[in-house]
Length: 383
Image 1: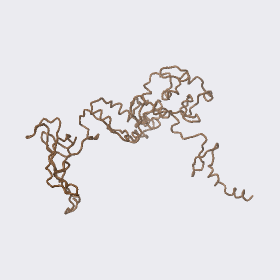
Image 2: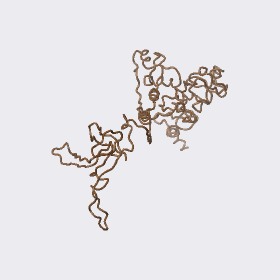
Image 3: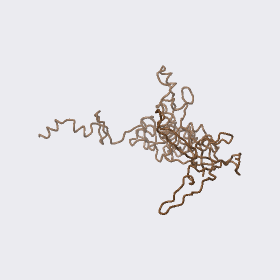
Image 4: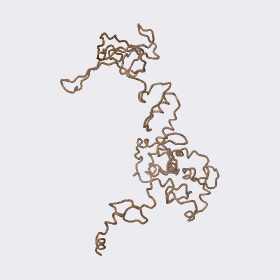
């Protein structure tokens, strides 16, 4: 049985300190001299029970090069019971409530936590995860790979928690908290953006250089990329990849989408280099891609009446109907994620109500319309 020491036993070169693990080799206890009585359960002497705290355990510590006198194996050490006394009312004078305990300083060591495993070398292990959610720190599987001696790409790990992008003003690679929210949405759509420091220069130093970003909350919403198999936060994915059908199996992060060298146009059925596609088009799902030649085939007002296409009011570009983010075909998948508009539904114009109701015309909801003119309803009843 694997056990671990709960306190320091020997501070010499044996290094039997708290947390040292070993295996129970044997134990000593005296025979029970009391005979069993009829019609009663046999009396058990605490000093004779194998689980008694008065018994002496011999623990075998592997890898030890020392041998005690009287033993035939190296690393065999007797663990004696220890008596401890503490006071519950230690702040009161005089203290009265005392607690005494006598126990062998050993605990089962079938498994260890991630914190207890730091600094140790384990040949093999397994992680047990239940309702596990990735956090911004190196714990769990990453720590286990480190203990096994496997290679960990720490740059990819930091990129998954704190994605970076290049500012078009200062041309520096900065993390997402150094960009405004609107500017980072452009980066998610594969467009050029400006950091807060460059915006501060243009606005006479009135803008902050860093925005608040809760990394722990973002880490709780981490998802896995289907291409690189790395768990990243949602801000590292294009909105179009998260809004597509079967996103759990098809979604790809922004880094993987930008790394693609060739894409297939769904209109002309031709595989072309990524440079022949619009920057925001590269973030769309594979079934909604269109090259620049097909996208700019008809310009001007014809974009509104083109069969199988729609014109996005957000980014002001024409897209195939597969890239529509709403049923009304007004926004693409990148621009419609923050929109709550639904066809056939209206919002009550009463500021104190603001209820949602089904209708074709904008106005008051049925409840507010019923209370709008009580005098007119009374006159109709009189007639």
